[in-house]
Amino acid sequence: MAGSIRVICPNLKCRAILSAPDHARGRMVRCRMCGMKVKIPSTAKVKTESSSQVQAEGDGK
Ligand SMILES: [Zn+2]
Image 1 (cartoon, protein in one colour):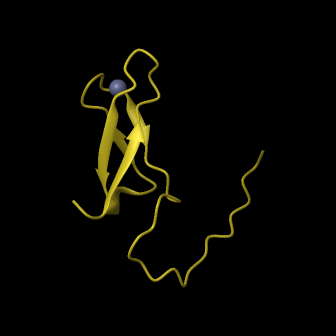
Image 2 (cartoon, protein in one colour):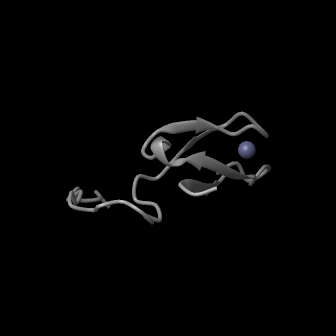
């Protein structure tokens, strides 16, 4: 399916690969395996999107 994002569950006891829809970027989804909330990164692989808007947020490290 196009427009899906794959994230790995942060739960070390789970580590399930979750697929989230493209519109779920930057949101929280719940792992269907363990129920842990996983944040979908907003800067995922962008395939078909006019990236005219660039998020210039400095990551506070
Ligand atoms: Zn999980």
